[in-house]
Length: 340
Image 1 (cartoon, rainbow, N blue to C red):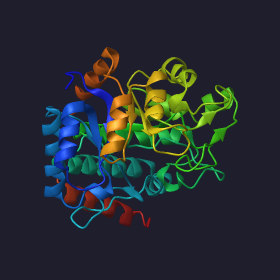
Image 2 (tube, helix red, strand yellow):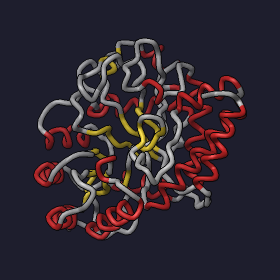
Image 3 (spheres, one colour):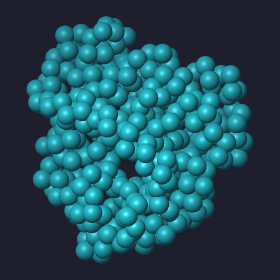
């Protein structure tokens, strides 16, 4: 096993790690694990799963991510865990009472971060900073705070800071912006034809405002004003736009490479992400043959990526929150404002 982890997150089909999977992870040393709803049944099982992955790769701090935004995208949605509201609902509250909306969102983010920290989860891959329009693909919908980039940035800041305070890594997504895409990048390749001037003034703006966030997830969307052929996640041109024009210098991880916006075999997709200059390829599904193929195509993290990861970890706090009490307080805030 290489001492430097591979620039790769792997996934699992089941809620346990088999002996063969354990051996594969020990041999290949992927940076992290992505767990979904299928992998998380209840707290003790989730904790054991995370511990076993970290034992396999020999790193107690190996990152384990999930999707935990609130609303319809929360993979901790079984009986033992409270259900959190969508960003769209917090936006509605903030439009009625901006200060109350921000306060509720900050507390909810702290509760969600603390819940994940207790399980050993490193991140819920949140917040979404994409704008939403009437033409936006339904894959975004209530996951967005709305169409106003300044409003999104203000609310997104509450999520980023609330998660950091509780030791959970925020990941802004889907940089540089999925909102103008009319197609779902899980199923098709979306093309955004807006001008550079329009994108800079709108879609890019929340990401620039929150560019101090330690991690960002890159969209599988084509921005034709910059690169007419390749989605951002595999485009060297878009890598330069994000790093230079937008000024983002944190960790850049692709959206899941299984999504149909990309083309080529699984190993080719891993290579495309890393060849474009991005730090990490996200392979969030996968059985043993797929994970093995992805690992063979990956390469060790660059020194620059390692430095970005270390810098991000240094910003994590250890605020302790009573998750259920905080969640109940947030619900009372909604009730007091008469927002359903």
